[in-house]
Length: 235
Image (cartoon, rainbow, N blue to C red; front, side, top):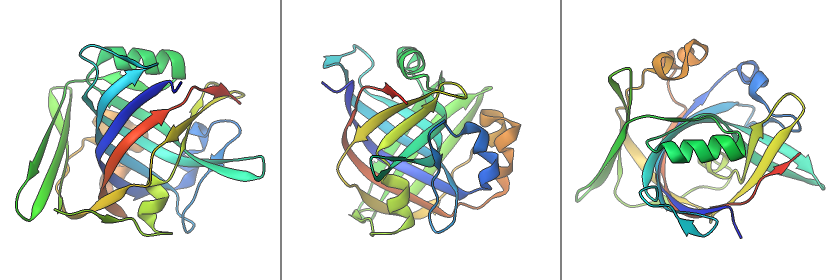
């Protein structure tokens, strides 16, 4: 039985190229940074976590909620193949119990903050808004997209960002948790306008404040799907 079954829907993905040296101290043992066309990425991702079941059980008042995370990309060579995964620097949700379970059992980096979202659809476009409150200020991921989804191109940056099917968590300098994430290949909505406002230093600290001055290499919205998170193993 999967540890968790849910849906990840309407994933706004804002992607930046960064100097890989900045991320080295976060890389879990047994993995290495993953690059696309020689570029190292971090992504801010806002999405809806829906229909959550843990070990087959629905948790009252914790089945549907927003999440915003900051992640980067790694890979691990095992049994003759490369496993491509993500490492989370920060994950924000509005439900304390979710943070407690993830931090306790998966050694993740969840925090609990007030959050809200708005999804608007008109004749020609869609609007996706995710917000979270830090120090009495609302941070906002907000994009307008084309109404209809399109396929994610093979060998594209969007494929690189979305096609990572493992999560890796640094326990300490010598131990790592690995867990598998399953979902079908996603489609994407093409972004027309990005009006996101994030106080990056206020949310993520001085170490990542430099991102405030960067332009994203890409912004898109993955449609999402049902997903599973399998039980962790130590590597």
